[in-house]
Every structure is written in structure tokens, then in C-alpha cells.
Length: 469
Image (cartoon, rainbow, N blue to C red; front, side, top):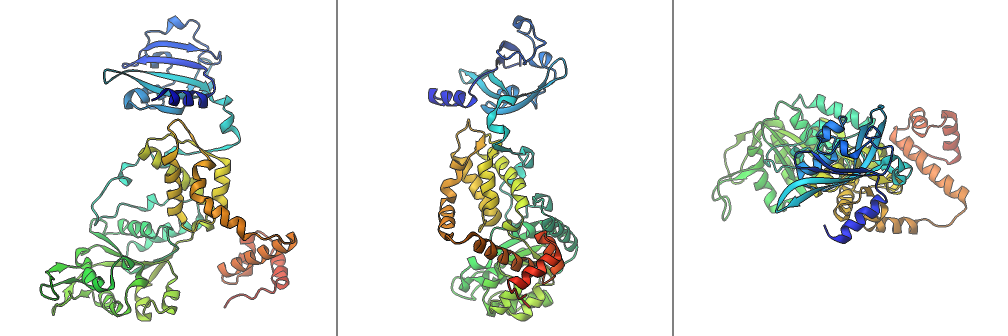
């Protein structure tokens, strides 16, 4: 670490209440406390020199001590949080900078600078604390696993939203069967996450899970990729199984199914009806046992209406459907998702973000999230990549480069008009959305809007809102 980096770290800490140095065995070599609230049971500093850290501070253990963690990992811990208990049973929370001490390439000890957390003005009212337990350093989610296996389960779907919880419960139920499932929702809502979770909750979990985006395959190749080829069927063709054969006994997930050419949808229909496939150029048919999950960012009815899907295929694919709501309709999920992604990228990028400024958090709640959960993850990854190691709070400056276009466009969209007209226009939009969402059920719409039913009926007449059929 350079002198400039050291200066910045100390500048962030602002002041020091105590310093402790230990050797590589955890023995205290030096300690000084400038704040009398720290370890008031210690009258003479010389009494504890040469003692074990855990003997002097029995409330600490190897997991809770930031000093021991820095010693063991060999990595600095900037503004780490710690709780100690004094001899009178008083809890004292500290913020520490813990640094390993190296000599000749070996770690010979560690030094810690501490201050009392109650004095930290940056955390009191201006920051939201992150729940670092959301990720717990789950390396399973970071590993490169075999591509024909699904790594996500229902436990990996993080939500505090009741609609999403109901979807998880429904997914667990339908996983026990073998019926086709159609998943729809906007880009980035987590359709493949649900598809993998469904597979892993089924009795096919130990069999292959094959995912394929239909929009990513050139039309000339999609048939051979899905159903396979035989040697000589076209120039250069060899005997190759298609994805349906590779997925034998397991699940095949076809994303953006509405991008599949109409003439190939009839072959998919045969698989659904009879369980048979025919390789390109082959005279013989082959029996396959595969569960089919499909997905689209459009409602299945709209896929049929727009002639992107055959009506007979629609009836076969949509035996069961899962509608994943966009993030803007479940803003109570932003906090747990934010906790998870920050914890994840703390591990991946060796950072120590423990708080989010209130300005950032309020912005995330207001944002429209066109890219949904995937966009939230990308914003967090972008921010943590550029944050300095000594920082512990995600600030607006860390994300503004990524979201400035949205802010600019949002400002341009607002035109000056009488406030009562603007409020009336927004009120009409919200009522129309509530009526449509509840399929013209006024009582349920009133509950969503948290207004009396009679009030809602009066406003429907006022704004001349005509429910959609």
C-alpha cells in the first residue's frame, strides 16, 4: 500500500480510539487505548503485554476478531465491524482497520486501528446497512459447473415479495410432474433461474439440464442443433445427436421460443405429443424422454396473436405457466437483492462494502428497472469494481456514470404544467393499471391502491376509465 493510500485510509477513519499489535500466534505485543470507554478493566497496559488476545478479550473468537481474520487471510480489512463486551457487560461496537504485517514474504503479525462505532456520523442517518449474510461466500454459485447441469435451486431465488413467494411454491408443486411449463416475463427477471430451480426440484435433478436461446441460433442451423444430424444429410454433416437427445431423461429449456421458425414448431409439437424426434436427413425416428420448459419475454397469448407461435403449439406448451413480475412491481425485493449482490462482489472483488448511502437506496427504489434484476446486478458490479479498498459505503458517485442517461431522460420527460393536472394524469394511470392488474375487480384494485372502494368508483367515473375486456 502506498503512502497516499495509507493517508486516505486514515482520513476515512478520521480519528483513532485504540491501536493493537499481535504476533502470528495471537500474542499481544503492543496496545494503547486513547478512549477510556475501551476495555476499562485494563488499568495498566503492561499487564496484558505477552498475553493471548483471547485471554484479554474473551468476548472475541477467531470468527469475530477482525485482527485474527486479517492475520489468517493475509488481507487488509478496511473498516470492519466488531463487537466486544467489557468486564461490566457493556457492549461496545467498533470499526477497525486491520492490516497484516509482513517480513521477508511471511506474515509475522497484524496491527489494528480501532474507533468506537457510536461516533460514526456516516452510518447513523445517511446510510443503509448491508446484510452480508445474504451471500455467505457461497462458492457453489461462483464455480464453473458442467454446462448440462442446473446450479440454481428455489433457495437461490431471493425475494421478500408475496407474489414471488407464491411463484416459488407453485414451482415446487409443478416440479413433481412432467407437464410442459411456459415461463414469461421481461428480460432480466430470472426466467432461467426459475427453469433451473424447477428442474432441480424434480425427480430429473440428476439428469441433464440443457438450455438454449432460440434467438441465438441462425435459422439454417436450429433444426440440426435441436434434433441432430446424420452423416451425409448435407455437405460436411456427421452423425451428431441434437439437444433433445443430449437432454435424455432430463429437461430442455428453450428460451425465446417465439423466435423459433414456424415451420420448425411442428417438429417440436411432435416431440410434445409423441415423444419422438427425427435427426436431420434421417429416415428413422428416435424416442426421447425429456421435459420441455419454454420461455418468452411476451405473454404466450401475444405470441399467438403476433403469429410468432402456432396455436396448437401454444396449447401444448402452456399446460402450466409462470408469470415472473418485473422488478419495478416488487420494489420490496430491491433491499435483499442489493444485499446479496454487494456481498457476492465483495467476495469476488475483495472489497468490504457494508453500507449503501440513503441517496443511492432512494434512487434504486425510484428507478424504473428496464433491465430488471440483471440490471441491478450489473450496476452493483460496476460500482464495486471502481470503489477503493478502504471504502465501506456505496455512494451515488459510484453508480452515476451507469445511470446518468436514465436521469437525463427522466428530467427531459417532465414538462412544466399545473400541478393539479400532473397529479390527475398520474392518478388516472395508476387506477387504470390497478384495474387491469386485477382484471376489472374494483374491490381488489381499491386494496392495491389503498383507498376506499367508493372513492375508487368515483374516480373511475371522474376520469371516464373504461375497463379493458
